[in-house]
Length: 587
Ligand code: ARG
Image (cartoon, rainbow, N blue to C red; front, side):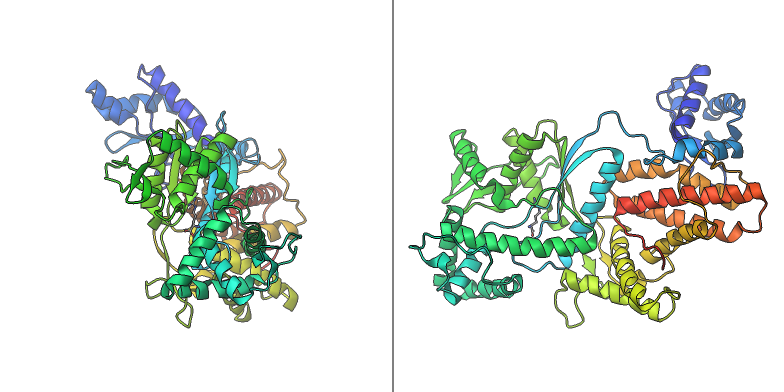
């Protein structure tokens, strides 16, 4: 049992022994580490209910706890807080039992949940840009945190691969390359397996087509018609579209790969096309779908929040299905296929209304049941001027640009001697990539999701302060401490800790506190809680490293300090893994 749960049990027993109701002991990590390791605040509500003095109640309970050698000291402070310090020998002896497992002391719930996680959301044939960093990086971390807790997670990229942009590209190609077989209605053979264009071609073509449609109604009408033909199964267009998908997905996979972001499902909006058609027919019959000025809508009334919601437009007047409609059909598909307990969407906070509509519609048509639907929004990435981040030339940065900028900044730090002093040329090239990407990800993940943050390439690659490189450095140091003394990182029951200094105690207590951070991060879908924990762990380790020499120490102390280093490495790696941070071997 982890430390917090052991203490909860002990405090509950003390409550009961004093004749008190133990259902609300309010045991938690202390927010005053100078006074205690853990605290129990349950005497306060109890006193209120019993109309007694809280300090007296707390004193009674404390008296019972003091009899247990588990505690070094138990005091009653303020209006009736019970402050507990754990004895050093307990902390030292429990390390292997509590911390060495892959869950690092976290106790998984008996009933794991099934979760569908929808993140990334890139659009086919468009270059990934600054707006795609956060959904990918946060989504990946949420996935890993959920899996750490024991959930079964199905990660779906939910490509934007249907609808108007596809029709625009087809139209543009039709004009530029009318000779292609996809446009020959008499063509009955097999279409080429290789696309007669590149993904770069598509990325340049799309903005041209989109601008063209805005000023040329005839062109726009053809694009709409081509979208309709594609959706209705036009053979040539489907083959063309498959090229769009194949090229884009290969590009997206490779870029996400650089970021360490991966998915179980590579489905897109198109995937539910047939299901959506059936859904529309059914909703019409049920009278849920209402004609409205040529379109068809689902009126929504009030949201859970009490706000009046605009109706969800399912089908536009020209017959095209809308973004909300595909999301609704996708919920149905996910329910049928995976029976999830929750579907989570990591999507820009500005799509909040869209999800409120979709979720309300989903429950209105009876899809939701006990399942929870959660929109995990996030804020924007700003430049140092606090306006949306731009490239040096004032353009919208691509994701490629962001990665390259972070990697180049890491490389500059190496040239300046801030890191990588002992690396050769080849290592510098490889390691600046790892450090740059981890720096980029950490700078994103350390912020509360909903807040905007400032992208500052020099700050985020600094080795000082709350940054990726600071953390990477600490972890590399843990590894090298062990390596230099020829000690394997593998934990064994012989890894016992004897606390001799405050720095050791502080670090060890931090290790025992991980489950609490995991739970908070999980409950709030908040990777920044793990980022914060990992930063503090790195700080505590560095303090320990400076205060507690290993080499000169006596044998017992040396063994203990190496063991503490091993446990720290074990937990730091688990946290890095939850955040999706790659750790270099040296730096
Ligand atoms: N492709 C969409 C966009 O670019 C994001 C998709 C988010 N996921 C969803 N299920 N709607 O805005």
